[in-house]
Length: 409
Image (cartoon, rainbow, N blue to C red; front, side):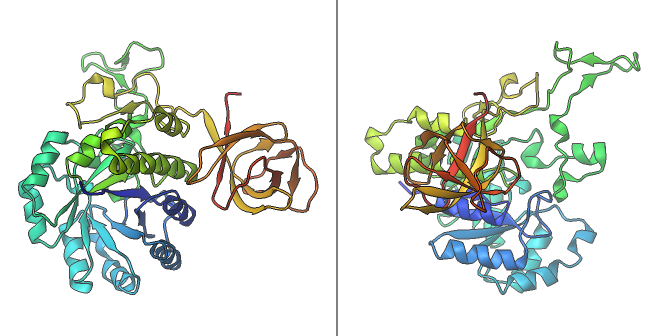
């Protein structure tokens, strides 16, 4: 069996580093233009240079998104930007538009091209067409069953890699090609500025009764009938690996560093566990419990196992399930006095019970007995975002360890 690449989102330089540290084989990210996540903290050329070096020093890969569906004005400045990318050591670019592909191929003919899910590839004939255009990886549309994916792999060139999403938010439109946001608030989802209009509350109006609004679902708050649950395939990894999928992709460039660390770590552990001892493998429920500790919606298997029914939507609310808060990131640890230096991410008090975990360790729990600010003054609360604090730890920790707190206690 081939070892699938675990591909993680990197919405910022910090998230890139955490994705790599917690087990991703590669990351995908956006530059300041031409990508589909305008709201992410996208990368300047200088940050790209630093991020690529960080990844390559650890034997990992970096892919840049140029996957907007381009209008004429979107092509302005693109050739000049691609010329600048030529100076970087990128491993690949992700593209959905044939015109953008042609521009990149002309300027950087040696660049590896990955075809975005925005291209809505749903069959082996399309895969073979894109192979003839020089594409060597296809990110398939999410609207495919596992059986369809197997057939595509079987009838594709042997050096064509097939990538599929295995975790994260689902879109109610075909492979993310949505006009709803553009129609509602003039923010084009296909050019990186989605307003997530599908998560809003909607009512039904019958044409002969103008002004009378009926909830589509029997709830006084209305109905979130476009509100898809989140994809989660962590319990089905053996089937995905055995199908021959080359790359497992995690959605979430807008999500937190805590999300990236937790989800990447869980999938890394289970993929490696299966590949090392497939006959003895079982999906340890603790990893499903772990990914439920990050902000998420209810889970679904999407189109993989069967055509979605009404159960794949959540009708009563568009809110996330959030039981834990990302509280801090370990910056340093003094072995002599067992005190950790921490960048605060959410408000934290003395007396709080916290959980701490790293890329290779299970979490441990402790209560904060004392806390100091950057000047060494004892404090009762750290209320300011990115405040530098110090806490004595009950066990040794390292740089990049994460602190979380149950917000229900």
